[in-house]
Image 1 (tube, helix red, strand yellow):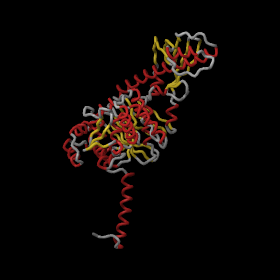
Image 2: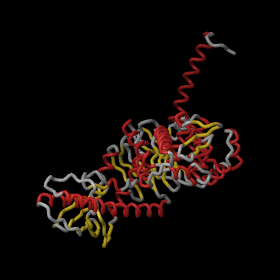
Image 3: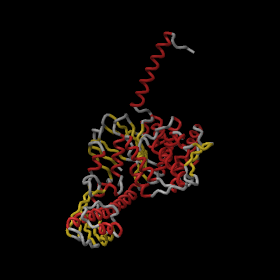
Image 4: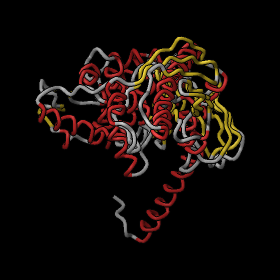
Amino acid sequence: MKLRIKSLGPISEESEIELGDLTVFFGPPNSGKSTVLRAIYYSLNTFGWELLSSKKPGYGLLNISYEIVDEKTVKLIFTPSDLFIRQSLPEGDFTFEPFSFIDFIKTHKVYERGIKGNVKFTSIVSPSECDEKVIKRLGEIGVNFEAEIIGNKGYARILTAIEGISESCRDYLYHVIAEGIVEEIGKRIYSKLELEFWKEMSKRESISNVLLIPYNRSLVAYEVVNIISRISQSTNNLLVLSDEFEEALRKSAWVAGSLLDVIELLFFYFRVLQSSSLLKRFGEGDKIYRILKPLIPGNVKLSENGELYYIEKKVIPWRFVSASIMEVISLLLTLREREIVLYEEPESQFHEKLQILMGLILYALTTTNKLVITTHSQTILYTLAFLSFLKPTSEEIIKLLDSLEIKNDELVENILEANKKIVRFYYFHDGRVEEISDETITKGIPSFVDVLDKELKWFSEIYLSRLRKGAVSKE
């Protein structure tokens, strides 16, 4: 997969980014790392049918307009639009290869005949002259229709007769019915395009979804498990939340900038998580859990009444669990195999030892996922560069883990398997993006080394000056 950039946000020079099994973006702040991460996200995310729209033209990825041909026939027109994506990113021009979802929509069409459906209208605001019995019937029985989809247009035939109403009420209700049919057919088209897109991406790139893990995920994860525990206690049973909402959360997990964004993301998290998923995810049968387990010194448990516990020698309520643990939990709540994972600053909440371990784990996760990360951490950057360059043996990996007081045979095995994967490094600076080899990074990156040299030189000059004045002990 490649991202070709002519310009995008702070990136002013033409750049090409080819994604590996693990791709690392590094460089100073405001150099475009997160912007490119989001460009990849918007290129691959299908967002779900929520972003098809007949009521807000230009908002969705697939916009639908309709025309009432006669009392029985509605004509539909489907138009792909990248306006939503362009409004969600800084001004710029880029393309994604082999193709983005919007490119797929533009170049593929759905053909289907013999569609039959029923639309019920449980909530209608109607003119006062509309007969209450008719409105009630629309809510209880609904409207039957049959339809066909022919590329970028479609036709729906209304089968349910609407009689005994005034002309103004009839006109109004036909528009209500048409909008209901548009939404049902739109969902159908969108789901087919989405399914075929991921089939093609799975065949070409071995990925079945895209996930963006934003910077402040641990805060959201903390609030989520807290709410799950409180609600579960009050209802005295396991929370059962739908798989549909799980997808809604995962596809909205990029929202994280402001307080309102966090509240919206928290809302999606709450609606998405389901207890059965948690029970499976926090178990030894899950490979991703086993890879991440060295970052969790204790255990996560779900009680019979649905309450979540964190246990490390003793039970610790969620409100007292450390930020570093919640960082890992945020991964476990969202990460699944065969995804391309876009991970912002994985060093968040981790001290140096855990950053080394996180570097090892990110490397190991290439056995289950493709990853793209942004980082300001020298520790993670150098850990990944040395792993990629040196391809350590099992004995060498075990020696490092022993020094970190970690014993995990499966992590060793996954790191060995990851040695076969492709790792790419991209340096963002001065309006451009350039690929840097792992060997070059192991010798030191100017933007990192120069700053440290300046700081150490400054400290040394102060120390020597005070030493000469006798202000510092020579011992």
